[in-house]
Image (cartoon, rainbow, N blue to C red):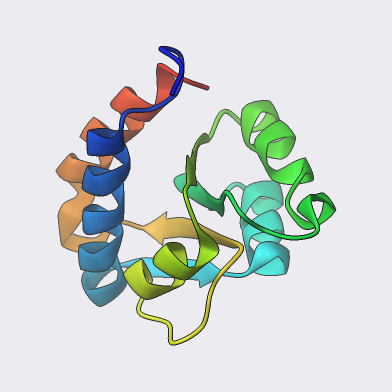
Length: 117
């Protein structure tokens, strides 16, 4: 892993936070919903599966997130991402729309993630 990539600790912390947010906040699941959330300015943070095939499905998300100044984090697999979001199926991408009771923790993760965006 290169030095300019997020650490495994950051990825683990962010996914753990996502598990809490799904219970008290609002998340958007799937590339279409995530794209809409970014375009509408309702996405606070975006998670992207690193093993999505074909990659064209999610290729626009980092560019759109940068354009909208939204932190995004690539996680190792869409299966892990889906599980962290409370789904029984893999998910190519997830957007946090409302952090619920985890607002302060999300701000902290976003600051850490933005070092790599």
